[in-house]
Image 1 (cartoon, rainbow, N blue to C red):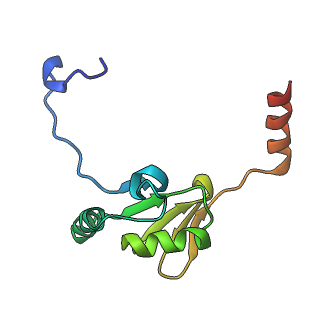
Image 2: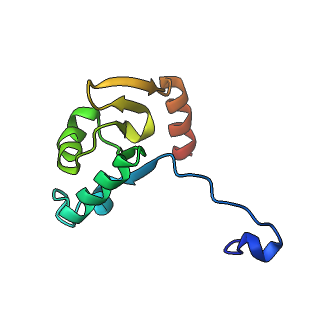
Length: 115
């Protein structure tokens, strides 16, 4: 069914409204040099946020390391950091959600990988 339109299945439905746009940094938001963001990209982010839809950077970096990218992009609401372990409010750097793996959980996974 992948790639099959719902109308082809006799199921008519409306698309749900977009509530959030998440983007990756390297190679997606950032240019090939890993530091620049095009004016076009900034304008698209601005237009989306003007409609009340948050544009969120999803990065493996901690908040402080992502701050420069967020400023360049003009993102002002939230960022997912540390490979999704933490959601941070950009304005004040407050974590609004976070979850971390316990050391014993990580040790178990590493043990399995090494087997």
